Length: 221
Ligand code: E4P
Image 1: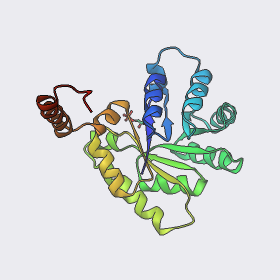
Image 2: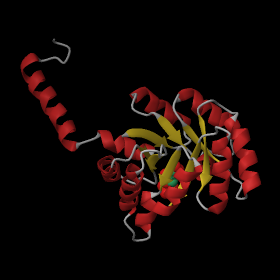
Image 3: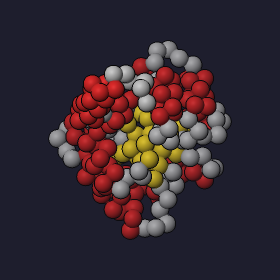
């Protein structure tokens, strides 16, 4: 499973790039707004220059002509831009039009297997089931990821990749990997948590302590 960062924060994306384990970025209007009143195009272009992989950038329009016009413009911003189109009838029609033009679409705000099926049939490059938001309303978000992966596997012609989104904690990541999701897009805080374990920290401290007791100096190698 590949890891994307779910953020529009340039410093966080730069750090993810330095770690060498981030192969894409997903943004959305809420995440971009968190960065203040920015120039959307410039911000997306900067992100695209930091991470060579797919950078999902969402349209704001809700109607088909608006989504298509915006998506065509966004697609020109960088070669690795992917346009995020919300699920639904308008989004499906827009996805179909854009996919035929060779524009990569991330079919977002997906909350059902049927929506994921429409995404695949319309030619979306990615579908983003929102795990955490389903958990928030008492449903099992991860079972949606499992079901989509299972359905897609029945049809080898489907090339749409599943991005487990709305990830809230490292356990979501583990479950997405077990489910066979192609990608999980994780918030920065979750990325940091994934690397940590109290026994790793305790182990390092004890090794250092044992070394220094005998060798006296950290640099004494
Ligand atoms: C995915 O592409 C979305 O940006 C994101 O995962 C939404 O997550 P949230 O439910 O934490 O806002």
